[in-house]
Length: 580
Ligand code: ADA
Image: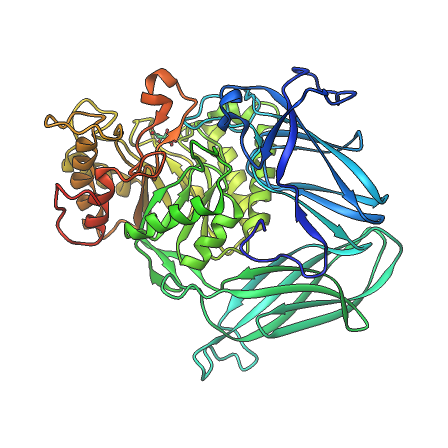
């Protein structure tokens, strides 16, 4: 199951997890290999090949192959949740789809496939260049491979391709807000995209949210159509951090009252806004206390099993956190399902990392980013945990070209989804790059700072108090300190409390967190980072080729700082010799 719930009740759906044939030969060819090398290796899917010792450092193209059988002739939809990061897919030797970007899904439909065995071949490429997003130089590793599930499902000629639910709360026939049972009415607008591989066909489109169903009988033209249904759902409970209520959503096509195709999802009803320095969740200021989380683990790379996702979220909550920044790309939808269920807020970001005006102007790098942004929003619009779309991280925001690109991205995000907040992570103040001309396109500011780490002097409260004053003076909006932290090699504890020691990392948080927690005007923060992660950046500059700023190690063992953060967030005085 690629989500935390079944996404259909009618289709035969399976994931193509398991063992696939794999080869890195023939190198650098774009055309489909005539015959897959007989001596091809086999690898697990989903998994990044760089998480396997034998391909630890493979950069470039690689080929996957597997077959699947159909008991009878069927039309099938094959969806790749993520292939990192350039992909070309062949079915029975014929190219069917290409995709750029390692963190968003893509799919194709194969009509009327004959009964019997069929061959899927995937060319994946993790080599980065001046024309990829992200660019070569990032501080996380450019894993390659089929890193998330491949879902194969049979579809009838007329099927639900997808749907977008939008809603307004507090509106009702009687115009009153809440009802006597404390619930309130949600006014739903459902856009249902119906595909039709055959001739015009009559269907009843039925959208159910909770206990309420709206129906419309339509004639679906060949090729398909999108239908908009509007209806009120009474007595909905809001999604809050304390009560993360989720409502089932079922979109079906019916013939004579019988469901012939369907898709399922979940939604949570909540409202987001900004007011002065506050980020409002359901009208109340929310105090963000969180962490950045890369999808990485030495055993699986970015292809993490559910157990790791659950464990990470449990440790994050145990530390007293209510927010996660998915740095710097859309995390697995199942992880977002877990955040929906746990009442944890998520900032989702697209991997524009350290781009300048020249980069944004190169080839179609902006267009592709716009596509990735739209794919991310389309994939995740129903997750109540996701409260903000983050457009970029530490780009050259003082440059005109970057400001224009940012404006375009902000428009794209708001056009695609006007129910969430828009932000980006700036480091212009911290690295003194001059005036940030991009945050004005956002609803709130995320700012990164590394005083006390990338500065010669040790950490001090004054550094941070000054930083906050300057940022707040420059930006009349809610401010979130989206990155701050210090590296610590696991087990390195020194009396001198030198940099790279767990002891210094603890001192860092003992110094900085009280400043951030004590600033009532601050909307919140997200610590850099949850766990140590493999990096591409100058491996010689990073001990163990890792970004060691995790408050837990790569194997999720707690560092001393985890205990310190947990205590500071719980409001009790840190007890320095406590571990966790
Ligand atoms: C930056 C960047 C992160 C990471 C961090 C660090 O702020 O956004 O991806 O590289 O610095 O550890 O230096």
